[in-house]
Length: 252
Image 1 (tube, helix red, strand yellow):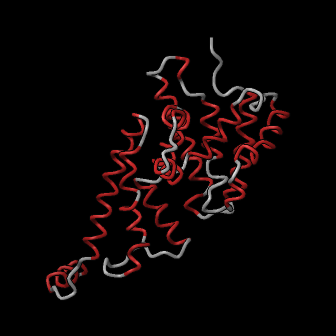
Image 2 (image 1 turned 45 degrees about the horizontal axis):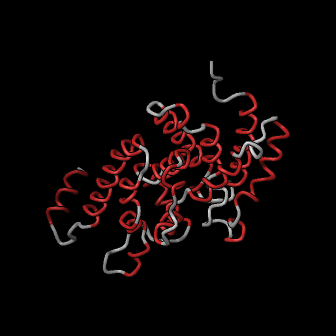
Image 3 (image 1 turned 180 degrees about the horizontal axis):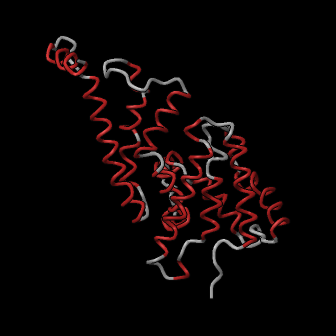
C-alpha cells in the first residue's frame, strides 16, 4: 500500500517552508501576503489531486513538489525583491533544502526535487511566461510539467474572482495607483480597473489544467459583473432628477 501524503519527514520540510514563507511575506503588502500563499497552496493541492484521478501513476504530479513550490512561489517575487536576488532561485533556496534535509532525513537536493521546485518558482509568474512566449523560449518542460501547471493555475485563480478583486485593489493602494479614473483621464491607464482589462480578464483562457479551467469560469463571470457594477455606479447622470428623487424616496 502506498504511503499517505504527507509522511512525517515531508511534514518537517513543509513546516520549514511555511516558516520561511510567513517570515518573508510579512514584508510584502496584503495583495501578496501569507494568506494569499495559503490559498495558492490549497488550490494547487486540490488541482494536483484532481488531475491525478485521470492520469496513470507515473504521470501524476508529486504532491510534495507541488506544495513546496506553492509555498515558496512568491518568496522571490520581482515586485518585491531585486533582479539580482531573484536571478538564481536554486542557489537561493539550496541552504533551505540542505537544512531541511538535515532536519527531516529527506534530501530533495539528492533526489532532484529541490531543483524542480526552484524551477517552478522561477517560471510560475504570468509576466515570466509572457516574456518566454515572446522570445520563443517556451519549451517542452513548460508545456508538459504538471506540477508547474498546478501551481501556475492555483496562483492565477487567486488573481481572479472575489479574491482577485480584493487583491487588485490592495496592490493598487499599496502602489498609490487609482482604483478607478475616467477613461479620458491619463491616470486611467494605471488604475485598478484597467488592470482587469490588461490581464485579469485574460487569465481564464490561459489556464493549463481542466479543473483549473472549471474553477475559473465562475470567477471570471464575477469579475464581469463587478466591472459592470462599477460602470453603472460611475455613470450616474448628475443632472437626472429621477436619480435624486429615487434616492430621496428611499431615504424616507
